[in-house]
Image 1 (spheres, helix red, strand yellow):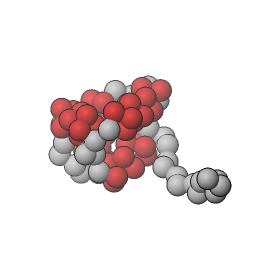
Image 2 (image 1 turned 90 degrees about the horizontal axis):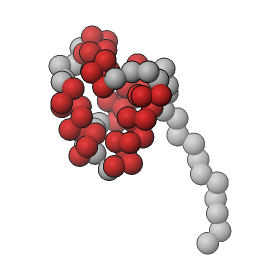
Image 3 (image 1 turned 90 degrees about the vertical axis):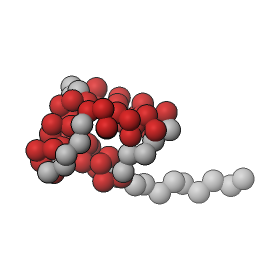
Image 4 (image 1 turned 45 degrees about the horizontal axis):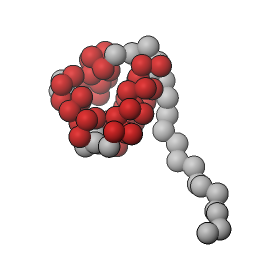
Length: 74
């Protein structure tokens, strides 16, 4: 769970955004009604929804892509 929080917060910081700015943008763009504390709690607990991750990525100029791992022999 800590990895998810750190990964998302790192991308937010590298993009020059704050969590407060992200929440404001999410509320305006997607019609959500969340608070900075609520989003922070979700990140801390690891209970953030995938759609919220996609929205955050969109706001900060990223997209989430799935890539197939190369098959390794064990």
